[in-house]
Amino acid sequence: MVKNESKDFSIIDKELTIDGTVSTNGRLIIKGVVKGTLVGKNVVIAEEGAVYADAEVASITIGGIFEGQVRASKELIILSTGSCKGKIVCKDFSVEAGGILNAHVTCIDAVEPVSEKDLSASEKNK
Image (cartoon, rainbow, N blue to C red; front, side, top):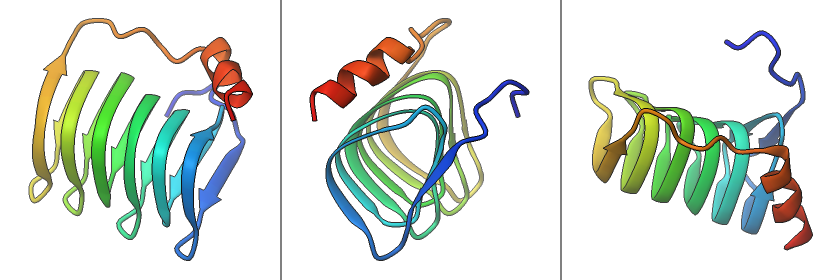
């Protein structure tokens, strides 16, 4: 874990579905459903969570379902319970045994990080 990472975190719980744009500077744990656009620093899709979106993140861990396009400036991890379908651009990438990957994957040396400016712009577009 990164030492200077924001201590703020949010949870989208099991009974909650969000259709639109979600953006955060802290850690986001998704147990519900997100559809649309996702912008954030550290995103975790729990085993019971599902995301159908275009995502621009620093780090994402997929334990549930992700379908769409994701650009991760640091890492993308698919856990043994996770499923990822779509298009991925990331720096570091790993899939645990049992994880499902049906995506076009591009791993590159440097992906432009999600900046505070990007997060502010997504807030204005709400």
